[in-house]
Image 1 (spheres, one colour):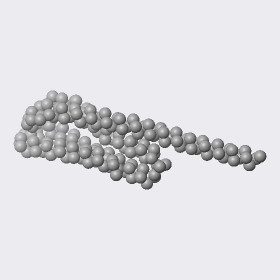
Image 2 (cartoon, one colour; image 1 turned 60 degrees about the horizontal axis):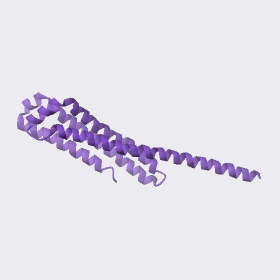
Image 3 (spheres, one colour; image 1 turned 30 degrees about the vertical axis):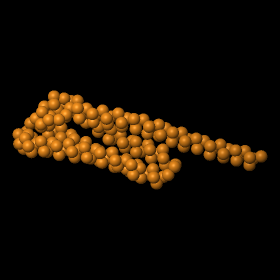
Image 4 (spheres, one colour; image 1 turned 90 degrees about the vertical axis):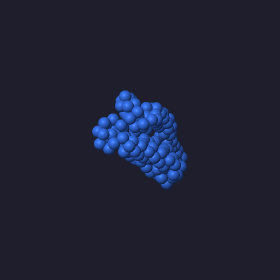
Length: 172
């Protein structure tokens, strides 16, 4: 009789541990789902706003549009930066969610997510440097129009490449 009661208590305790693990896993899965939507919204909002402001044209025309909408441009870049940094939370929540399924694969995926965030963050720093080049009249005066346009184009391309490379690196 005592053995049956002890076995029943042990089974209840194991059942409680499993339900606690499953509950934690479910919470992190919901956080990951929310973060996926968050990343899509903040990334698209920032990218579309920046591309709308920059548009096309010469360096002087683009710089005029960026200076006229500098605050909105900064908000858009900050939105993209928040999206990039939120990828750290997504990587962690996916790791916790998937660890019971395959610990090694979950850890590798987390490292890829962290790589995405760091590479994307470096790309965002380059984009903020590009903003400084647009808004600083000294950069155009010192370098000349052609060299300034090349430098601004280079920062834009480098930021775009880093952002895309970071986005691709989430899938191992």
